[in-house]
Length: 154
Image (cartoon, rainbow, N blue to C red; front, side, top):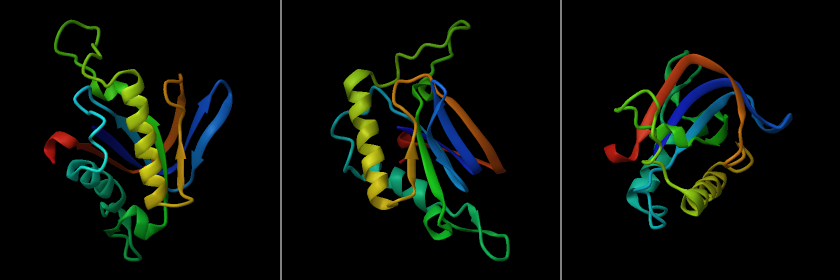
């Protein structure tokens, strides 16, 4: 699993002209799931670490404008967007291969579980894109602060 986090002033997702998710200050989290991520991943130490890092990294400013607050401490929102292209393999040629990304029902089930778990950890502050849809994602990156979390590192 890969989580590409961007601290934002605001972010939104539009599908077919309809806004399906929108937040103010907080995090835009692009969620990539690997073909190695199986149905047993949720509940594991790696899963808990990734979600905990996403919500608890101290990347928001305190009253002295130092990066001392987590998303939870700051009271920000999160917009979760599925992004299989985080597992693009660009080693050969000019066309990326996406064979490393989770496929079909496995990817959908893992993404839905992630959304559900994050909603439980951050009630009332979670928005999402639409899995498998062609989405227009807009954001104002704040800082900029952009962080990549990769489950292989945990």
